[in-house]
Length: 427
Image (tube, rainbow, N blue to C red):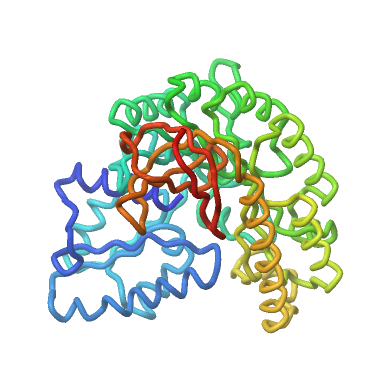
């Protein structure tokens, strides 16, 4: 999401006459796009701000700004207590950046963190910052209406609002025409996408089908689905279109129904497993990834074991795993005690990571001997003699150089694997 936001910001500033500096030492304006979902993300930003503060001594006219979620949450501390920045701009105020920068240059502290019920930046053509020129992101909605107890997103990004589908289609077409061959449709909960016009409702299954229909040469991914909302209709759309990738990121967060209720996730373990069964039935070749939180308020050893057993039962291909991090202002911070000791959180996270490493290795070993269509993204990081790309299931594949180039498709038979990569040859 932050990558897509950064591309919108660059476009807005380019329109106002600014250009990107290749070297931070040459910049007259430094903007740091931030995330507030976890405390360690915020701590990295504080560290980054302090690390670049020395540049002010060299460049008295240098302006430093914080944009995004952390800007909305910590505006007073950023501007007044720490005094490390000149402007603070929330995720719905990017259009005001040129005006705010001018205010900062005039010696004023510039701030706009107002949230909007309408802003989607649908009319902004993002300046693509990705390096491979093959894959890109398109935001289809902003904000979130799910009030998960641990999550700060609804407070810093506001309520859900969906983007006009015509603007989404237009942007994807433009990407294809400029050489991109894969797009990821982004939303905090893409399953909640809803565009109402003249008493007609267009939901996410219809939107992604329209995007997939642009051309079979453009792969389509999406992130993120919510287990309470992902529908059979969506799964059948994916099954009908080969260019909609066979990978679904479906955050579980916990395998314990008791903890899920405390988290206000609005589904149970049984519901989650039912959705997984539907995915396996309707799209048998689909890979699954997830998010897991360990050490949430009141989590017991038994709750933790239920999370591990859920991971084992589903057999996730990969996962993002985190220790619970209390975020100020959330329901969990207001209502619950963060009572799991840090040492226990760390032990449980290590156990979870070890399990997922085994599951990921097993998943890759199952792919040996199979043939996959791979979209070439460029040379392998380790050797120019090898190319690298991804399967529809979002697995990285490395294979010897062939007479193909970035953005083309090849069929690769998998011969072996490492812990992170499939290795094969073109056939």
